[in-house]
Length: 200
Image (cartoon, rainbow, N blue to C red):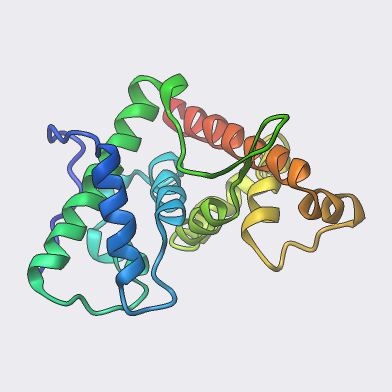
């Protein structure tokens, strides 16, 4: 069965909280340790939208399989449900970043403390970098840019075991407040990437 390609022109409602939870549960029950969770999926789809290769020009056969991590679905009905939910969430990210970027909110882990809410964007960044791997040459040009390259560093630090963190970066990664600052910086970097790519 061939999955439908993404069509940004379709009228597709954003997932509500119950549907997001259903998608998270569906992903968690897939029989593969490499299947993405909801946070990683959100980062992955965000990279597809914000990145240098227009998502409308990509075939779903190229970007959907990494989400499932090689897992087989229990039925065609379950697969169709998963694909529909993913495409709707992709559309929501795409339309929000395009039409109302200030209202865009990534799906991140949040820990509440007495002082503040601390985000941990590790899974989100892992998913983001999986999308980067689909178009490494196009993304390399962004990472090499003098202005954008340093802004992308938090994404790499949180999402890659091979980031080669220096002592200061390692200290940030080991501290919840430091991880919070890196996560927020990663989100800010995505806004810059998206604005830059859409104005090019």
